[in-house]
Amino acid sequence: MASSKASRLGEEYVWRTRMDKVNAELVVLTYGAMVAQLCKDFDSDYVKVNQQLDKMGYNIGLRLIEDYLAKSNTFKRCSNFRETAEMIAKVGFKIFLNITPTITNWTSDGKQFSLVFDENPFADFVELPDDGRAQDELWYSNILCGVLRGALEMVQMQVEAKFVSDVLRGNDTTEMRISLIRYIDDELPPEDD
Amino acid sequence: MDEEDERGAVFWRLERIGYRVGQGLAERFSRDRPRFNDTLDVIKFLCKDIWTLVFRKQVDNLKTNHRGVYVLTDNAFRPFARMSAETSSQTLIRAQPFLWFPCGIIRGALAGLGINATVHAETTQMPTAIFQIKTVPAKS
Image (cartoon, rainbow over all chains, first blue to last red; front, side):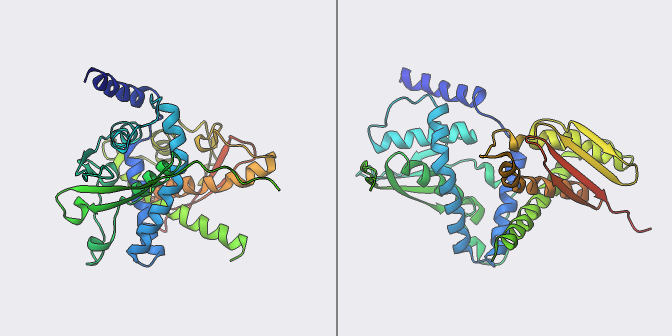
């Protein structure tokens, strides 16, 4: 208990002192304008927009993990997936977005959990397009799923991440479901011919 | 699509996204300040307030010919801070796309404050960025 309290203070400290900050409104506006542009580019095919956001996030995640390892005070490998979940919610989201989603709905095998977002900085001032489809098809913050998938892949975990509810759609909560597919074995680099 | 067209498409998209962002920023952050007196006032707001919001520093130098052309020079443009490539000419070419989003922001912010303009950006020496704003006179 004592150690977990100390580490929470640690994240607050990392966030305050080590992270470069950017104006929140700038992020919200930029993300929003980008999603709007994607909706236009894909002719409101929201399935494709979701895919594209996930892909962009994936490419961010592949690089972001480096920054995470450099800036967070986490020195050791997570011993199980539960610990990984804690690190994602309490360290990752804290130092990059200054939010701490709640971890919940574990399956009994410890391979699937949900992150519930009480606040979502991307979703400020957002209204989904009023075309009768976006409410059912668009996952506005889908970039986050890609980020987690990419970041975890770089630390030997293949996961599936997807939103299952979003307050922007009129749901009561914003919930992301994360499932561990497998731990990726270290593969030897291909031999030089 | 050849490389030229692709660059054009990327420019068009980034510039538009920036435009929307610039409009929003101008709207939100000019709300509680006194009314602008003239175009120069608006440009100063752009160089100080908006630039600080987006790049955490102010524009270093502002020049104008007093006939609607303004040249903004940022000697340490944030997005260029950690960039390099093999040769300096290559760096300049590869850095160019990072100017397009800010161009859009400038054009959008000015439009939000009632000034129509065209914005052109270039860099000849990293990490300096030069933005040239040509205002379009309102039809009277």
